[in-house]
Length: 363
Image (tube, rainbow, N blue to C red; front, side, top):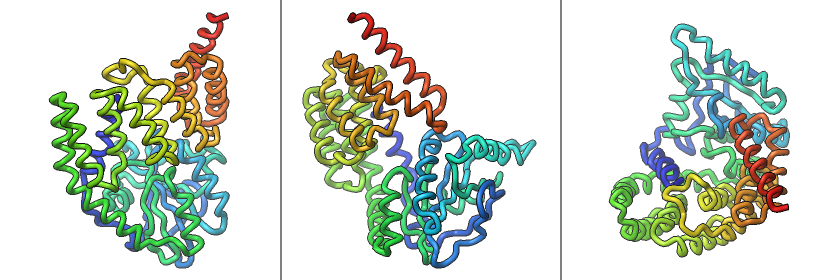
């Protein structure tokens, strides 16, 4: 069950609570090992806006964000400079240049899909330490927005609300002080959350699902900066009372996460996933369809993995024709998307063949 994934993500966030580099601070310099593509940015210039995004060649989610960053670079040409800095690459001590060559080849292979400034960190990870580690950021991709005052005004995932942040920054309407307070509040809650979350984990390990739910119900209103707790509650509820879990899932989809395609997809996929542990006794595929359809609507049928979730929900419900329709759309998208690896493409193709076989069997 993806409860373990959500829990792991939360534990990573809890690993460091105090930030050394935070919203409101002056952006550090970028003494990279090599500028791979575009005009080198030796220093941040006042009056200009930048996005510094950290990624790696081995990072799947980073590959998904690259085309999005390219679109932002095109949209805000001459207004925003997008800089992608590769960090945490595997370094060969015998050949300190190997990781640089790997990044260069990756950028060449991406071609126009990665059409913004690209650089690579050195073997010692100087950039990663000055930015990511100083800001207690443990996962990539992570983006930092630097405003016209050379000040960091936002830190987050590039696929979150980076678009909206840039719009406001360029319009001079982004309240970086409010964002700094929000992140400070989040850090304070994070420190307090560690003890409570440890107690929740212990209850789950003891299979005391009812007590674990009570613990979560105490935590959710207390730690408002962590909506992931509501997703964890859904997955915990699946173990305690499936029927209530599906009602709660629909409630989340209609309220808390109605505009969050990734969260909706997480909920729907948990219901249809064959690997959900323990196996669900009475999966509510109609609920999964309703939730996945909202995620598809939000992404305008342009996200292959979300289309795949909807297709599988239809298949599990017995509607094979709708499953084929949406899986075909997913396949058409991944065929044109070099950011999705071959294993994922094969998985989607295999699922399509499974749907076709089922459809032929019904004739």
